[in-house]
Image (cartoon, rainbow, N blue to C red; front, side):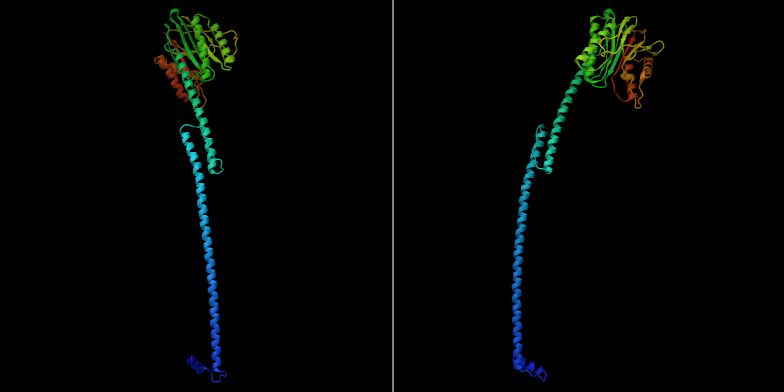
Length: 388
């Protein structure tokens, strides 16, 4: 300290008027004061820093607690939500297993309006649709079995191997549906040389048309079995009365029948009654087909028929009588043009001119109709009768 005073005195100006001792004491006090101020500032700064640190530490602790609470709450909420979703998914899974096992009466109860609730509603709708679809399939399968049985009965009632000393026969029928409305029959009693040929077409298709067809065919056959020599006009009138009663009063339907009955009177002559497609006769002498005009009434519309015209036609030896349904001649191509009688006659003339058997002739006609039309919208029926 003494050395500092000496250095300070030596460095001062010569005209210093202050007492050096006082000046040093004053400086010492100033330094002491500055030291006190510095210490006070350091203390205050330290206190403030500690307070700030504690405040930050408390905020960090609170924030950590809040974050931890939020995370814990989120985990708990997610767990609870997951349990709910899992349970509803398990409900849907179990219901799906029951459906796979064939139980279509199962329903799920998910009332929430979220996506799973919507999925549950859609699941119930789907189950209902599956139930209705299965019922419809069951009905269709049952109807298919019934139609197949009816078709078998219809095919069984066609004459399998008709025969007569004066004629040979070939028939073919392709229904548009499983059961058609067309029919043909050949009723023969060789002992008395009796022969009835019938052909018909019931309006519409399906089981109803097939049922009416069976009525008409059975009614004609019963008259033949009762009296093969009965007048065809009387037979047609009684068959019509029966059909009117059954169709209108019992079946409550509006179907009708176009049918012809041809009764053989000997020497190649036939008496024809009823309304159907006009017959063709292939003449062996000219090798051409001739259209036989045979007007008559339809059946099943009015109970009391007026006078019934009788058309007589003659089939010479080697000639072929052709009876057919409108499904053959009215088959249309894509342009709406019909196959018509001239085309059918041309096929018959060509096939018979080549010496083909009657079965092959019917097959040739149907093949040509198939090539012309490309579809099968109506029953196709043809019966060929050749005089030996």
